[in-house]
Each structure stands twice: as structure tokens, then as C-alpha cells.
Image 1 (cartoon, rainbow, N blue to C red):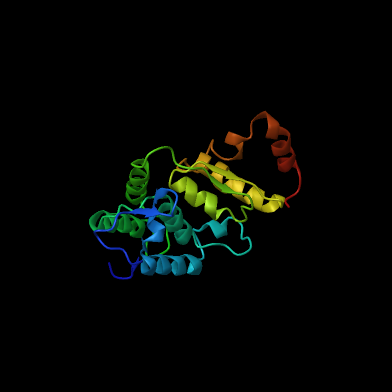
Image 2 (cartoon, rainbow, N blue to C red):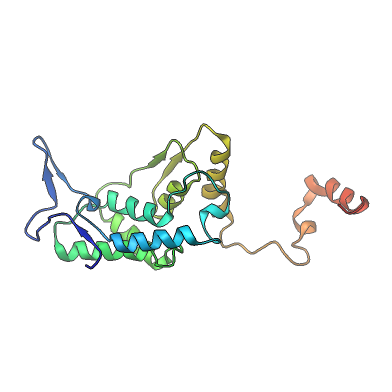
Length: 204
């Protein structure tokens, strides 16, 4: 449990909290977090020059992706009120935030999604009315949350649309290269005129 913040919880204390009128369960983020692992992964994410959301298009004040990933999971999952199970959930968070700042493995995501699915009801939608660089929505989708985004500025709206709709639609598909897969293979009728003109016009 090194590097984890435990907020005065005892194994004998339930994960429920009485606010004077209703009894509600505490969320894991209110009780414990693997802060050292999150901080290390967030710094690595900030230091990386390739392979991050920021590489698609930089926008103001980008939030470290590992921090968002951990926050979304811990703010949604209930604290079990049991030390052993809580340790398991903290291990899941640590799996979501690799030390080198890269995306989590599919196995880590599978464990996180399974833990979230164990709770009653459907996952809540994540709404970001000022989506900016899109990291909130990307990480929410990674964990299986339904997402809704908007922004007054069309630039971040376009960035987020690319990250959350276009990129997932082509993820894992082969690159457009080689004979028959270059521009001749993808042009079709809409681009036929442009392709012909480009061959008869002097080099740019």
C-alpha cells in the first residue's frame, strides 16, 4: 500500500456515509488513491513527445491522461469498506496508469471495466461541455463510459470529434499503402478528377 492515500478508514468501518438525511456509499476517491503511481505516470505522460493525445493537436492546459483515467474510475466505483477488496481496486488503478505514461494494457482495461460493471445500474454518461483537447472523453471511452461533449470553439470540438469518433473507427485497420491501396485504391469517382489533374500538373 506504499504511496497510497488512506483517509482515516478502518477495516471495521462500512463504505457507507450518513450525511444526516440519507445513507450513501462513499466512492473510492473519497477514501484511498495510489497517488504515487498516478503522479509518476502523469509526469511520464507530460514528458512524452510521441504517442499521446496531445500529438493529434495541442490545446490549452492539457490534463495528464493517466490522472483522468484514475479519477474517472475512482470517482465512479464504490469504496467496498473492506481492506482486501479496496487493495484490489487500488491495484486496478495502478494497472491503468503505467509508469512510462503509455496507454494501459487491454488486460488492465478489462479488469477495470469488469469492476465497474459489477455495480448496480448502467455507467453514468460523462459530459464535458468545454471539451478542449478531448482527454476527458478519450479516457472515459477507454473505460466504457458513454460520453457527450461540446465546446464554444470549433477547433477543440473538431479535435475531440477526431479523437473520439474518427480514430476509433480506423483503429487496428491496415495502413493505406502498397499497390492498389494507395490513392488509386481509395480515390474512386469523387477523387478521379483530382487524381487526373495532379498527374498532368507540374510538381508542387
